[in-house]
Length: 108
Image 1 (cartoon, rainbow, N blue to C red):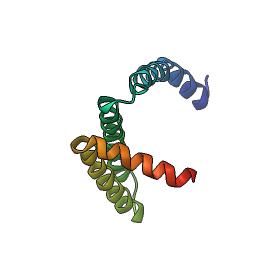
Image 2 (cartoon, rainbow, N blue to C red):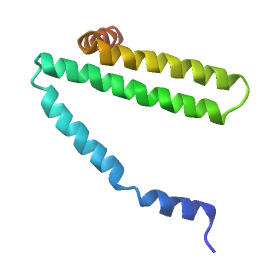
Image 3 (spheres, rainbow, N blue to C red):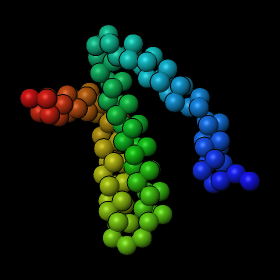
Image 4 (cartoon, helix red, strand yellow):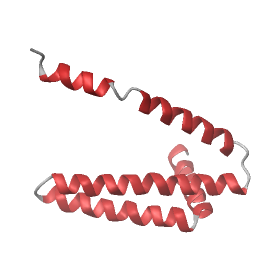
């Protein structure tokens, strides 16, 4: 009989291709972005919007699975992430410059 860890490892091992496909997709996106024209700036802004939207959905799902004070905190973070994704979809070039500003502050 197999332990729970062995079963979990075998089931997780069946999804080995997901990080590979994600890495290839990010590499293809990076090649497009390296041109640094207005379209690539907007692409970065939209990608940030997509990532924020996914993070918002994740926070809502986490909020539904926990209890206590953490539940409200996850819901608040979910709302903030969804608002950030809307900003990324509506104003993608401004979103890119906001990302560059934050990175500049962190690296200075």
